Length: 283
Image 1 (tube, rainbow, N blue to C red):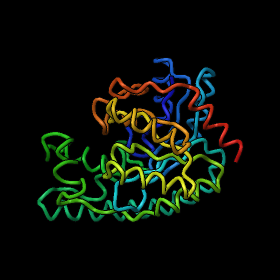
Image 2 (spheres, rainbow, N blue to C red; image 1 turned 45 degrees about the vertical axis):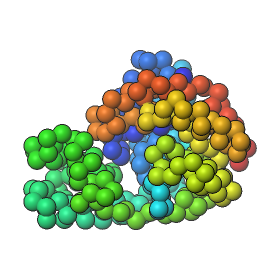
Image 3 (cartoon, rainbow, N blue to C red; image 1 turned 90 degrees about the vertical axis):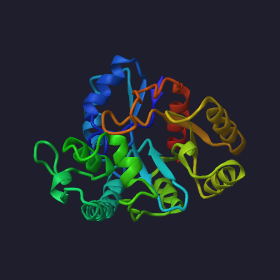
C-alpha cells in the first residue's frame, strides 16, 4: 500500500517529514509522497530521513492551489529538480502572507483578538516556512476564542464565511504547464471536493487533460465508494494515471483521517506509483 498525498509541518500539517516516515514504516506503507501546499521546503529532510527506511519509496511532491471558479488543486508528483519549485514557492509565499494578513484583518473587525505575529511563528519562535488557515484556526482554538477547530473553518474562514479571503494563485493551465516543464507528473487532487458535478465535472477534467493533466486521484479520505468508482471510470476513459492518498495533516486539519488509509477506505496499490514514476521518466 502507498499514500501519495500527505502534508507536514512545512505547510499546514503537524508532523515533521521524519514523523511521517516513521508512521508510514509502522503501518507498512511501501510508498509515501510528501505534498505540502505550495512548498518543497520539507523535501530535502524527507529524502534524507527516508534512507532509514529502504522498504519505502519516498516521492517528492507539492500541492498547488489554483485560480478557478471551482475549488481545484493540482499535485506535482515525483519532483526530481527542486530548484524551479523553490522559485515558484517564493512567489506563492508572498500571496499566502497577504491572504493571511487580510484574514486576520477581517477576524479583528469581527471582534477576535489575533495578530499576524500570533500565527507567523511556531512554538519555538521560528518563522513558519508557509502560512495557511490551520495556523489561524489553531491559534483561535488554543486561545479559547472558538469552541472547536471545525468552527474556525466552517463559520469563519471557508468560502462564503465572513473572514474568507481568496488567495491569489496561478491558473490550472499555468501550473500544469509548469509541472510538465519540470518533468514531474501533474495530478488532479480530490475531485470529490471540486464544486462541480456530473457532466460539468467530466468536461472540466477532460479540458485539463487536453491542457496536459496526466493523472487524477481516484481514492481520497473524503470519497465514497461510489465516487471512487466514478473517478476510476473517468481515469480509464480519459487515459489518466491513477493516484490518491489520505490527505493526512496530522492534528491540524482533516480530522479522523489516518495516514495511509484515510478514514478506512483508502487502499492504494503500489502499481499506481510505478506507473507515475514510469511516466515521469518518459518525460
